Length: 417
Image 1 (tube, rainbow, N blue to C red):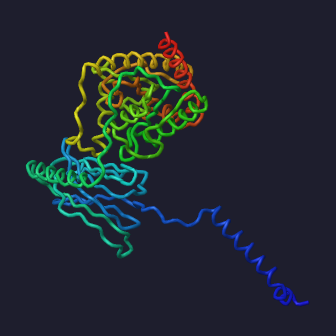
Image 2 (cartoon, helix red, strand yellow):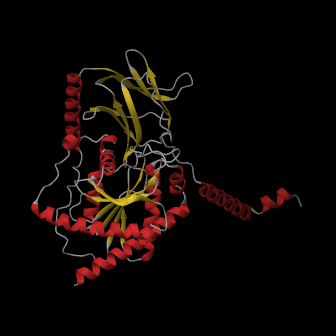
Image 3 (tube, rainbow, N blue to C red):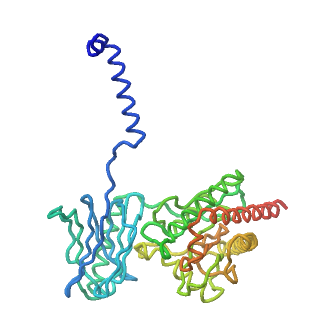
Protein backbone atom coordinates (compact mmCIF):
# COMPACT_ATOMS: atom_id res chain seq x y z
CA UNK A 1 0.00 0.00 0.00
CA UNK A 2 1.12 3.56 -0.65
CA UNK A 3 2.79 4.92 2.50
CA UNK A 4 0.90 8.21 2.15
CA UNK A 5 -2.37 6.31 1.92
CA UNK A 6 -1.48 4.49 5.14
CA UNK A 7 -0.80 7.77 6.93
CA UNK A 8 -3.97 9.46 5.73
CA UNK A 9 -6.01 6.37 6.50
CA UNK A 10 -4.98 6.65 10.15
CA UNK A 11 -5.60 10.30 11.12
CA UNK A 12 -5.68 9.64 14.87
CA UNK A 13 -2.34 7.89 14.78
CA UNK A 14 -0.90 10.69 12.64
CA UNK A 15 -2.20 13.31 15.07
CA UNK A 16 -0.61 11.44 17.94
CA UNK A 17 2.77 11.36 16.20
CA UNK A 18 2.52 15.09 15.42
CA UNK A 19 1.68 15.98 19.02
CA UNK A 20 4.52 13.80 20.29
CA UNK A 21 6.90 15.45 17.84
CA UNK A 22 5.81 18.93 18.90
CA UNK A 23 6.15 18.06 22.57
CA UNK A 24 9.65 16.71 21.99
CA UNK A 25 10.65 19.81 20.05
CA UNK A 26 9.26 22.10 22.77
CA UNK A 27 11.09 20.22 25.53
CA UNK A 28 14.29 20.36 23.48
CA UNK A 29 13.97 24.14 23.18
CA UNK A 30 13.39 24.40 26.92
CA UNK A 31 16.45 22.26 27.58
CA UNK A 32 18.55 24.53 25.45
CA UNK A 33 16.98 27.60 27.04
CA UNK A 34 14.03 29.38 25.52
CA UNK A 35 14.81 32.70 23.88
CA UNK A 36 14.70 35.51 26.40
CA UNK A 37 15.09 39.22 26.07
CA UNK A 38 18.80 39.96 25.76
CA UNK A 39 20.45 42.06 28.44
CA UNK A 40 21.40 45.58 27.51
CA UNK A 41 25.12 45.33 26.81
CA UNK A 42 27.71 48.09 27.07
CA UNK A 43 29.77 47.22 24.01
CA UNK A 44 32.43 49.85 24.55
CA UNK A 45 33.36 52.86 26.69
CA UNK A 46 35.34 55.59 24.97
CA UNK A 47 36.79 58.96 25.90
CA UNK A 48 37.19 61.66 23.27
CA UNK A 49 39.33 64.63 24.19
CA UNK A 50 39.60 68.09 22.61
CA UNK A 51 40.98 71.34 23.95
CA UNK A 52 37.54 72.44 25.13
CA UNK A 53 35.91 69.24 26.37
CA UNK A 54 36.14 65.56 27.33
CA UNK A 55 33.43 63.37 25.81
CA UNK A 56 32.46 60.07 27.47
CA UNK A 57 30.66 57.65 25.12
CA UNK A 58 28.97 54.35 25.96
CA UNK A 59 28.14 52.09 23.01
CA UNK A 60 24.94 50.22 23.93
CA UNK A 61 22.90 47.41 22.44
CA UNK A 62 19.66 49.16 23.46
CA UNK A 63 18.40 52.63 24.29
CA UNK A 64 18.59 53.61 27.99
CA UNK A 65 17.18 56.13 30.40
CA UNK A 66 19.84 57.80 32.52
CA UNK A 67 20.48 60.46 35.14
CA UNK A 68 23.63 62.54 35.54
CA UNK A 69 24.60 64.42 38.70
CA UNK A 70 27.66 65.84 40.43
CA UNK A 71 29.12 65.02 43.84
CA UNK A 72 31.86 66.72 45.84
CA UNK A 73 34.47 65.70 48.41
CA UNK A 74 35.92 64.39 46.12
CA UNK A 75 34.60 65.74 42.83
CA UNK A 76 32.72 63.10 40.86
CA UNK A 77 30.34 62.89 37.91
CA UNK A 78 27.85 60.09 38.48
CA UNK A 79 25.68 58.51 35.78
CA UNK A 80 22.88 56.25 36.99
CA UNK A 81 21.53 53.73 34.49
CA UNK A 82 19.38 50.60 34.43
CA UNK A 83 21.05 47.23 34.97
CA UNK A 84 23.64 46.73 32.23
CA UNK A 85 26.12 44.07 31.14
CA UNK A 86 29.44 45.92 31.44
CA UNK A 87 32.83 45.22 29.81
CA UNK A 88 35.30 43.23 31.88
CA UNK A 89 38.08 45.76 31.33
CA UNK A 90 38.20 49.44 32.29
CA UNK A 91 39.45 51.67 29.45
CA UNK A 92 42.74 53.44 29.96
CA UNK A 93 42.59 57.20 30.44
CA UNK A 94 45.10 59.10 28.36
CA UNK A 95 47.11 61.94 29.84
CA UNK A 96 45.36 64.29 27.43
CA UNK A 97 42.07 63.76 29.32
CA UNK A 98 42.93 66.42 31.88
CA UNK A 99 39.39 66.73 33.23
CA UNK A 100 39.10 63.03 34.12
CA UNK A 101 41.38 61.18 36.54
CA UNK A 102 39.56 57.85 36.70
CA UNK A 103 36.34 55.97 36.06
CA UNK A 104 34.64 52.78 37.18
CA UNK A 105 31.34 51.07 36.55
CA UNK A 106 29.14 48.16 37.58
CA UNK A 107 25.98 47.15 39.40
CA UNK A 108 24.99 49.61 42.14
CA UNK A 109 21.62 48.36 43.41
CA UNK A 110 19.31 45.53 42.36
CA UNK A 111 17.91 47.45 39.38
CA UNK A 112 20.51 50.14 38.85
CA UNK A 113 23.99 50.36 37.31
CA UNK A 114 26.35 53.25 37.86
CA UNK A 115 29.26 54.90 36.05
CA UNK A 116 31.43 57.09 38.28
CA UNK A 117 33.85 59.55 36.71
CA UNK A 118 36.52 61.12 38.92
CA UNK A 119 36.92 64.79 38.01
CA UNK A 120 40.49 66.07 38.19
CA UNK A 121 39.17 69.65 38.47
CA UNK A 122 35.77 71.41 38.58
CA UNK A 123 33.66 70.38 35.58
CA UNK A 124 30.25 71.03 34.11
CA UNK A 125 28.05 68.63 32.16
CA UNK A 126 27.63 70.63 28.96
CA UNK A 127 25.51 67.99 27.20
CA UNK A 128 24.16 64.50 27.88
CA UNK A 129 22.04 62.61 25.37
CA UNK A 130 21.42 59.26 23.65
CA UNK A 131 22.04 58.87 19.92
CA UNK A 132 20.04 56.39 17.87
CA UNK A 133 21.91 53.82 15.75
CA UNK A 134 23.30 55.22 12.51
CA UNK A 135 26.12 54.61 10.03
CA UNK A 136 26.77 51.18 11.50
CA UNK A 137 27.10 52.54 15.05
CA UNK A 138 24.84 51.30 17.90
CA UNK A 139 22.91 53.32 20.46
CA UNK A 140 25.31 55.74 22.15
CA UNK A 141 25.09 57.55 25.47
CA UNK A 142 27.13 60.75 25.22
CA UNK A 143 28.21 62.94 28.13
CA UNK A 144 30.26 66.07 27.41
CA UNK A 145 32.33 67.52 30.26
CA UNK A 146 33.79 71.01 30.10
CA UNK A 147 35.87 73.04 32.60
CA UNK A 148 34.02 74.96 35.29
CA UNK A 149 34.78 77.07 38.35
CA UNK A 150 34.86 75.86 41.94
CA UNK A 151 31.86 78.05 42.77
CA UNK A 152 29.79 76.86 39.79
CA UNK A 153 30.63 73.23 40.56
CA UNK A 154 29.49 73.65 44.19
CA UNK A 155 26.26 75.32 43.07
CA UNK A 156 25.50 72.45 40.69
CA UNK A 157 26.21 69.87 43.40
CA UNK A 158 23.73 71.67 45.67
CA UNK A 159 21.13 71.78 42.89
CA UNK A 160 21.60 68.08 42.07
CA UNK A 161 21.42 67.16 45.76
CA UNK A 162 18.09 69.00 46.17
CA UNK A 163 16.72 67.20 43.11
CA UNK A 164 17.82 63.85 44.56
CA UNK A 165 16.13 64.58 47.88
CA UNK A 166 12.90 65.52 46.11
CA UNK A 167 13.06 62.28 44.15
CA UNK A 168 13.77 60.25 47.27
CA UNK A 169 10.63 61.61 48.95
CA UNK A 170 8.59 59.97 46.20
CA UNK A 171 10.11 56.57 46.91
CA UNK A 172 10.10 54.46 50.05
CA UNK A 173 12.51 55.59 52.72
CA UNK A 174 15.48 53.37 53.46
CA UNK A 175 15.06 51.12 56.49
CA UNK A 176 16.60 52.67 59.62
CA UNK A 177 19.54 50.89 61.20
CA UNK A 178 18.65 48.26 63.83
CA UNK A 179 18.25 49.62 67.34
CA UNK A 180 21.21 48.99 69.61
CA UNK A 181 20.72 46.37 72.30
CA UNK A 182 23.37 44.79 74.56
CA UNK A 183 24.16 41.16 73.70
CA UNK A 184 22.40 39.48 76.62
CA UNK A 185 20.20 37.11 74.61
CA UNK A 186 21.98 34.41 72.62
CA UNK A 187 20.70 32.83 69.42
CA UNK A 188 19.67 29.17 69.48
CA UNK A 189 22.23 28.61 66.73
CA UNK A 190 25.18 31.01 66.34
CA UNK A 191 24.52 33.45 63.51
CA UNK A 192 27.43 34.26 61.18
CA UNK A 193 27.35 37.01 58.55
CA UNK A 194 29.98 36.74 55.82
CA UNK A 195 30.82 39.85 53.85
CA UNK A 196 32.39 39.73 50.37
CA UNK A 197 34.28 43.00 50.14
CA UNK A 198 33.64 45.50 47.32
CA UNK A 199 31.42 44.51 44.37
CA UNK A 200 29.52 46.03 41.48
CA UNK A 201 30.67 49.55 40.73
CA UNK A 202 33.53 49.13 43.24
CA UNK A 203 36.00 46.53 41.89
CA UNK A 204 38.45 46.82 44.77
CA UNK A 205 42.10 45.93 44.24
CA UNK A 206 43.44 44.65 40.90
CA UNK A 207 45.94 41.94 40.13
CA UNK A 208 47.37 41.06 36.72
CA UNK A 209 44.04 39.44 35.83
CA UNK A 210 41.91 39.08 38.96
CA UNK A 211 39.72 41.70 40.60
CA UNK A 212 39.21 41.77 44.34
CA UNK A 213 35.39 41.82 44.09
CA UNK A 214 35.42 38.47 42.23
CA UNK A 215 38.01 36.88 44.52
CA UNK A 216 36.09 37.80 47.67
CA UNK A 217 32.76 36.60 46.28
CA UNK A 218 34.17 33.21 45.27
CA UNK A 219 35.78 32.73 48.69
CA UNK A 220 32.72 33.76 50.72
CA UNK A 221 30.56 31.36 48.73
CA UNK A 222 32.95 28.52 49.62
CA UNK A 223 33.12 29.57 53.28
CA UNK A 224 29.32 29.85 53.54
CA UNK A 225 28.95 26.42 51.93
CA UNK A 226 31.32 24.78 54.42
CA UNK A 227 29.78 26.51 57.44
CA UNK A 228 26.26 25.49 56.40
CA UNK A 229 27.43 21.90 55.88
CA UNK A 230 28.25 21.64 59.61
CA UNK A 231 24.56 22.39 60.41
CA UNK A 232 25.80 24.20 63.52
CA UNK A 233 25.24 27.77 62.32
CA UNK A 234 22.85 30.12 60.59
CA UNK A 235 24.85 31.76 57.81
CA UNK A 236 24.02 34.94 55.89
CA UNK A 237 25.95 36.71 53.15
CA UNK A 238 25.92 40.48 52.63
CA UNK A 239 26.06 39.81 48.89
CA UNK A 240 25.97 36.68 46.74
CA UNK A 241 26.41 38.39 43.36
CA UNK A 242 28.32 41.22 41.75
CA UNK A 243 26.54 44.17 43.35
CA UNK A 244 27.68 47.08 45.50
CA UNK A 245 26.67 47.20 49.17
CA UNK A 246 27.47 50.42 51.12
CA UNK A 247 29.71 49.95 54.16
CA UNK A 248 27.06 51.10 56.62
CA UNK A 249 24.55 48.68 55.10
CA UNK A 250 26.97 45.77 55.50
CA UNK A 251 27.20 46.54 59.20
CA UNK A 252 23.41 46.88 59.45
CA UNK A 253 22.91 43.49 57.79
CA UNK A 254 24.96 41.89 60.56
CA UNK A 255 23.06 43.77 63.25
CA UNK A 256 19.66 43.04 61.67
CA UNK A 257 20.35 39.30 61.89
CA UNK A 258 21.60 39.69 65.47
CA UNK A 259 24.89 38.19 64.29
CA UNK A 260 27.25 36.49 66.72
CA UNK A 261 30.17 36.94 64.31
CA UNK A 262 30.85 39.12 61.26
CA UNK A 263 33.64 38.12 58.85
CA UNK A 264 34.57 40.56 56.07
CA UNK A 265 36.70 39.06 53.30
CA UNK A 266 39.12 41.13 51.20
CA UNK A 267 42.30 40.85 49.10
CA UNK A 268 45.06 43.44 49.27
CA UNK A 269 47.32 45.22 46.78
CA UNK A 270 50.61 46.97 47.39
CA UNK A 271 53.42 48.48 45.32
CA UNK A 272 55.97 46.02 46.73
CA UNK A 273 55.16 42.96 44.63
CA UNK A 274 57.25 40.60 46.76
CA UNK A 275 54.93 41.05 49.77
CA UNK A 276 52.46 38.19 50.21
CA UNK A 277 50.35 36.36 52.78
CA UNK A 278 47.08 36.45 54.70
CA UNK A 279 46.42 38.97 57.46
CA UNK A 280 43.52 39.64 59.81
CA UNK A 281 42.35 42.94 61.27
CA UNK A 282 40.25 43.92 64.26
CA UNK A 283 38.88 47.35 65.13
CA UNK A 284 40.88 50.06 66.82
CA UNK A 285 40.85 53.81 66.31
CA UNK A 286 44.63 53.68 66.77
CA UNK A 287 46.22 51.60 64.02
CA UNK A 288 48.84 49.00 64.86
CA UNK A 289 51.18 50.41 62.19
CA UNK A 290 51.31 52.74 59.19
CA UNK A 291 50.46 49.95 56.75
CA UNK A 292 47.31 49.06 58.71
CA UNK A 293 46.29 52.72 58.83
CA UNK A 294 46.81 53.08 55.07
CA UNK A 295 44.79 49.93 54.38
CA UNK A 296 41.92 51.16 56.55
CA UNK A 297 41.88 54.50 54.72
CA UNK A 298 41.76 52.67 51.39
CA UNK A 299 38.99 50.28 52.43
CA UNK A 300 36.98 53.11 54.01
CA UNK A 301 36.94 54.88 50.64
CA UNK A 302 34.71 52.16 49.17
CA UNK A 303 31.61 54.35 49.44
CA UNK A 304 33.41 57.23 47.71
CA UNK A 305 34.41 54.93 44.87
CA UNK A 306 30.78 53.84 44.45
CA UNK A 307 29.54 57.44 44.26
CA UNK A 308 27.77 57.63 47.63
CA UNK A 309 26.59 61.12 48.66
CA UNK A 310 27.83 61.62 52.21
CA UNK A 311 25.77 64.77 52.77
CA UNK A 312 22.72 62.64 53.62
CA UNK A 313 24.54 60.02 55.66
CA UNK A 314 23.60 59.95 59.38
CA UNK A 315 26.35 60.64 61.87
CA UNK A 316 27.94 57.82 63.85
CA UNK A 317 26.06 57.21 67.10
CA UNK A 318 28.05 57.98 70.24
CA UNK A 319 26.82 56.61 73.56
CA UNK A 320 28.52 55.39 76.72
CA UNK A 321 26.47 52.15 76.67
CA UNK A 322 27.54 51.47 73.10
CA UNK A 323 31.17 52.21 73.99
CA UNK A 324 31.09 49.69 76.84
CA UNK A 325 29.50 47.04 74.64
CA UNK A 326 32.07 47.68 71.94
CA UNK A 327 34.85 46.88 74.38
CA UNK A 328 33.38 43.40 74.83
CA UNK A 329 32.98 42.85 71.10
CA UNK A 330 36.54 44.04 70.48
CA UNK A 331 37.83 41.43 72.95
CA UNK A 332 35.79 38.70 71.26
CA UNK A 333 37.02 39.87 67.85
CA UNK A 334 40.62 39.58 69.02
CA UNK A 335 39.93 36.08 70.34
CA UNK A 336 38.60 34.95 66.96
CA UNK A 337 41.52 36.61 65.14
CA UNK A 338 44.02 34.62 67.20
CA UNK A 339 42.21 31.37 66.35
CA UNK A 340 42.33 32.22 62.63
CA UNK A 341 46.08 32.86 62.81
CA UNK A 342 46.67 29.52 64.58
CA UNK A 343 44.50 27.48 62.20
CA UNK A 344 45.55 29.15 58.95
CA UNK A 345 49.26 28.94 59.70
CA UNK A 346 49.69 25.54 58.03
CA UNK A 347 47.20 26.16 55.20
CA UNK A 348 48.56 29.30 53.56
CA UNK A 349 51.27 31.94 53.78
CA UNK A 350 50.76 34.50 56.53
CA UNK A 351 51.89 38.11 56.53
CA UNK A 352 54.38 39.04 59.23
CA UNK A 353 52.56 40.28 62.35
CA UNK A 354 49.46 38.60 60.95
CA UNK A 355 46.98 40.09 63.43
CA UNK A 356 46.76 43.87 63.06
CA UNK A 357 44.18 46.52 63.90
CA UNK A 358 42.88 49.82 62.50
CA UNK A 359 39.72 51.89 62.15
CA UNK A 360 37.78 49.99 59.48
CA UNK A 361 34.23 51.32 59.11
CA UNK A 362 32.90 47.88 58.24
CA UNK A 363 33.98 46.56 61.66
CA UNK A 364 32.13 49.19 63.69
CA UNK A 365 29.01 47.30 64.76
CA UNK A 366 29.07 47.86 68.54
CA UNK A 367 27.19 44.64 69.28
CA UNK A 368 28.77 42.18 66.80
CA UNK A 369 32.31 40.70 67.09
CA UNK A 370 33.87 41.54 63.72
CA UNK A 371 37.05 40.83 61.78
CA UNK A 372 38.38 41.76 58.36
CA UNK A 373 40.52 39.14 56.63
CA UNK A 374 42.87 40.04 53.79
CA UNK A 375 43.31 36.71 51.99
CA UNK A 376 46.54 37.74 50.29
CA UNK A 377 48.00 40.21 47.80
CA UNK A 378 46.73 40.42 44.24
CA UNK A 379 49.92 42.27 43.39
CA UNK A 380 51.98 39.17 44.22
CA UNK A 381 51.97 36.56 41.43
CA UNK A 382 52.01 33.55 43.77
CA UNK A 383 49.23 34.96 45.94
CA UNK A 384 47.09 35.93 42.96
CA UNK A 385 47.46 32.44 41.46
CA UNK A 386 46.26 30.71 44.62
CA UNK A 387 43.51 33.27 45.33
CA UNK A 388 41.71 32.17 42.16
CA UNK A 389 42.25 28.44 42.79
CA UNK A 390 39.29 26.41 44.11
CA UNK A 391 41.48 23.93 45.99
CA UNK A 392 43.16 26.78 47.91
CA UNK A 393 39.76 28.31 48.71
CA UNK A 394 38.50 25.01 50.12
CA UNK A 395 41.61 24.54 52.24
CA UNK A 396 41.65 28.04 53.73
CA UNK A 397 37.87 28.15 54.19
CA UNK A 398 38.26 24.90 56.15
CA UNK A 399 40.75 26.62 58.45
CA UNK A 400 38.23 29.41 59.06
CA UNK A 401 35.47 26.90 59.81
CA UNK A 402 37.76 25.28 62.39
CA UNK A 403 38.35 28.74 63.88
CA UNK A 404 34.61 29.42 64.04
CA UNK A 405 34.07 26.08 65.81
CA UNK A 406 36.74 26.92 68.37
CA UNK A 407 35.38 30.43 68.87
CA UNK A 408 31.83 29.37 69.64
CA UNK A 409 32.93 26.39 71.70
CA UNK A 410 34.81 28.80 73.94
CA UNK A 411 32.27 31.63 74.04
CA UNK A 412 29.29 29.32 74.68
CA UNK A 413 31.08 27.62 77.59
CA UNK A 414 32.06 31.01 79.03
CA UNK A 415 28.53 32.43 78.74
CA UNK A 416 27.06 29.33 80.41
CA UNK A 417 29.15 29.84 83.55
